[in-house]
Amino acid sequence: MKLVTAVIKPFKLEEVRDALTALGVNGMTVTEVKGYGRQKGHTEIYRGAEYAVSFLPKIKLEVAVETALADKVIEAITSAARTGQIGDGKIFVQPVERALRIRTGERDNEAL
Amino acid sequence: MTLMRALKTGFGAVSAATLMALPAVAQAAAATPPVPNKGDVTWMMVSTILVLMMTIPGLALFYGGLVRSKNMLSVLTQVMATVCMVALIWVFYGYSLTFTNGGGLNDFVGGFSKAFLAGVDVNSVAATFSNGVYIPELVYMAFQMTFACITPALIVGAFAERMKFSALLVFVALWVTLVYFPIAHMVWYWGGPDAIGDAAKAVAAATDEAAKKAAAAKLDEVKADAGFLFKLGALDFAGGTVVHINAGIAGLVGCLMIGKRIGYGKDLLAPHSLTMTMIGAALLWVGWFGFNAGSNLEANGTAALALVNTFVATAAAGFSWLIVEWVVKGKPSLLGLASGIVAGLVAVTPASGFAGPMGSIVLGLVAGALCFIACTSIKNALGYDDSLDVFGVHGVGGIIGAIATGILVNPALGGAGIPDYESKPGELAVAAYEFGPAVMAQLKAVAFTILYSGILSAILFKLVDIVIGLRVPQEQEREGLDIAEHGERAYNM
Image (cartoon, rainbow over all chains, first blue to last red; front, side, top):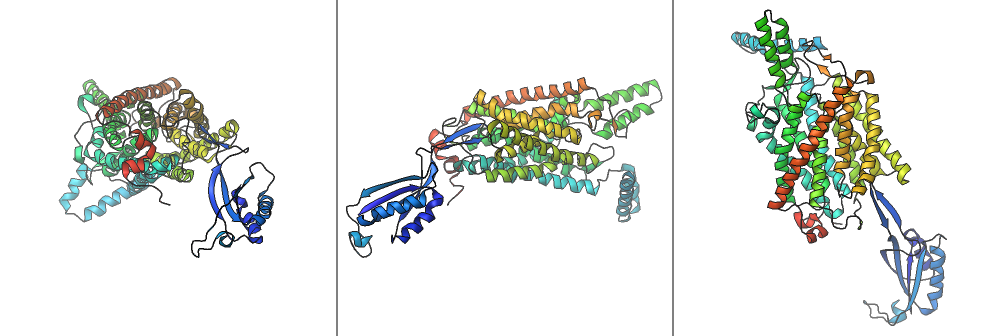
């Protein structure tokens, strides 16, 4: 099993969700986060006060999938979330040791 | 217009007389108390309510939107509590200290003869700026009360997000007593047009030398019964010096003495809701028609002039700030637009009944641009933390407006001219305009107000700091004044 973590532009969430649903992904966890990479931030000016806002709002999406599906998931997220502009985000993949569905006690691939 | 008023007055007297026994008619005819015009009374009651609306919720929301969400309630509470407290102080002794004769100190402050509204009842009247026109003294007192309430509320913005609530209340009580009431007395206390007109008529009517001398002495006495700045010839239609310079300087002194907010110049101290600020600025503009046009004390052409000036100067200043900011900083911001609007309202306040509309537009354009510079370059260069730019908008805008009033009053520039109640008593004559004395009187009044308000405010801040402490502890400032001082949160979402 793999845990795919993607940090994407907030307005791309629906397209990414649709693409993953089409692959048969049954669930995911989404968090509103702030961060920056190469995009850096922007400047806000309130009268005389200028603030460099470095952390921009992003969506962090976490989805655990069977190892066999991981490459397709990465590909789907990449194509759905890409705008070609700086700030499109990043994808990280980690191995998952165990998984468990709390209600039924199903384990690993059964639990995804 | 005059005929209509005379007819109405006569009619009112007759209808009142028919309700009374005949001997009462003779008494009423002997005393001839002035009967206020219902239109004037209505307009002044509406104006009074409009000025209250400027403060709550107008000013409160304008300021509240500009602070961080953790301090929203503290600003709203400070503004609203100031209104409540000053309204009470005003009827207890504030009105009396401002608008009565102060005996030996009459140049600077009034006395206690009308403390607790002694003698102010449904029958007493107050003079306006026209001969023979009066309004109920209760309305005049209430209208002036709203000015006393908003002025200290303006200062709140300078030390927002760090001032201790108890210290604020004590400071405001002391400040209105020792700074606002005296300054308002110095600028606005005078005998009224009829007192001067009647005394001038007596001089003209005197036949022999001795009578003439006595009448002239009486005229001098009537003219001397006025505040120090009024006698200098300083013009302040609706409170440029009394309200805005006064509050702006007190705010500057306050933010210098209390010190910068934690994280100033380093952390993000961005406004939490410019939506609220926009609503507040718009309510200020609407309410300001009561402030400026109401300051005419009667509903006539001069009130209409003040209304138009309050429209166009404000529009010009809002636009001016927006454009300058667009050019200098790259983007036209809503906060810039709203700030320019308030700067224009401030600047036109002393000029509103004196300048012409085109003069007011020039004033607005200048005020918008200069207040922008004051709030951006000057503030940053000097490094003081005037949280919501009380000095940059009210102090600087007030000074520009006060000085410009001395120029724009000139009839040659479309101004209304300086009224002359003496040379043709009973008529609204206009004195010949002289640039030097007119501007000099304004400069003296501005300088005096800056010094008086600056020095007295510094002493009062120091006093409150020693006794109570001006500032909340560091951890409370970090937590936010809403929870720390008031035990509640603005937004539970």
